[in-house]
Amino acid sequence: QVRLVESGGGSVQAAGSLRLSCVSSGYSIRNCVGWFRQAPGKERERVASLTGYGDTYYADSVKGRFTISKADAKNTFYLQMNSLKPEDTGMYYCGGTGSWACGNFIYWGQGTQVTVSS
Image 1 (cartoon, rainbow, N blue to C red):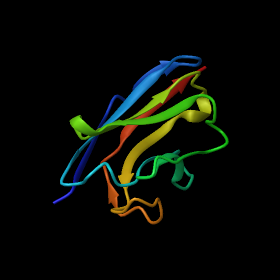
Image 2 (cartoon, one colour; image 1 turned 45 degrees about the horizontal axis):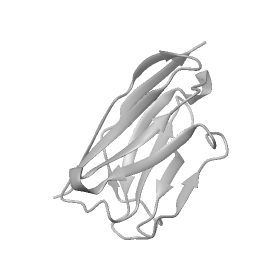
Image 3 (spheres, rainbow, N blue to C red; image 1 turned 120 degrees about the horizontal axis):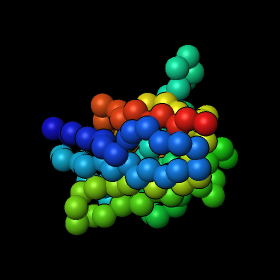
């Protein structure tokens, strides 16, 4: 049984930083891992992902500010978010595809809220 549990969300002022963590059980993080977010009234969007081959993807809106990484020994992956903006506010979800490629995400955490105030 796959379980992904996010933590690290919270409220921060603009220009601040947060680090989100996703602890995995039952899912090998050698597979693709990713972070998504959903703002109120908007669709869920992929923010960052990391394939099993080591290739990364970042949404244009977060390039240069967010970094995805993982610690295999801890079965944990992270999203370091710097220079946060109010438009980064939303519910952040970690996810996995079950394969090395980042295609269809089928495993999800429960979400952690990030609120950035101006």
